[in-house]
Every structure is written in structure tokens, then in C-alpha cells.
Image (cartoon, rainbow, N blue to C red; front, side, top):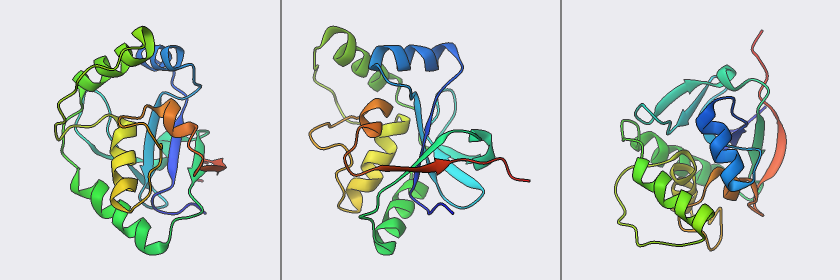
Length: 159
């Protein structure tokens, strides 16, 4: 039902998730990208970028970009898969907190590290799609507001 490159936007249950949702004034605290009917790729705190079972996110919202061609979806997946094993960008989380809480945009030195939403914004950018126009380091809240995405369903538990 869902295609590679579709995005799972997640409502969290933990303390960090709630903090992200509160600070960004969004119901979402995490973004993962669908790879197949069974797996997503995600950048997640406290572990390296990698695979997660799709049914782990049962009940979470799935968004699609109707403008994507099959070729662009392949480019997005190739980019995401090449990032497997990269580290989580804790410094960018602090940078994002300053942007939202203090309304200050500080200088930031890019590194080959990701938070969940920047992984997917960068993957889409490689395919020529600016997922969050005007936002260099998007949060899950920014991704959810993307004019290019449409909610297309919920992750269902496999039977």
C-alpha cells in the first residue's frame, strides 16, 4: 500500500518525544522513511541510523509526496541506505531547541550526522525535492507542514 520513500510521522510516548512535541508545537516527534512493506530507515537517538520494523510504528501516520517519480523514490532510498551506520546529531538537537525556544538561529557546522527529519529532508533534496522550503534543518514539525506531503494512511500491525 505504501511506497518506498513515504514518511512515517510519529507521535511519541517518552519524555524526549513529549519535549520535542511541546517545543515545536506539533503532534509529531519523529520521522522514519518506508523502505519496504516491512521496514523503515530512521535516525534515532542513542543508536546509529538503521532499519526498524515498520509494524513497530503501528497506528502512526504515513505521508506521501504525490509528485515523486519512481526514479526519484529510488534516489531517495539509495541516499537513505548510504547513511546507515551514521551517528545521531545531538548538537543539531540543541541547535533546534535554540531556534524554537529562543527564536535564535545560531551558526552551525554541518557534519555527516542526522536527526530523523534532516535525514529525510536531505534524501528528498538529492532527488530534487525541497521537502521543507526555506528550512535548512527541519524538525518533524517542519516535515509535517510540508506543502508537498499528503497524509495517506496509518501503519497497520501485520497479521
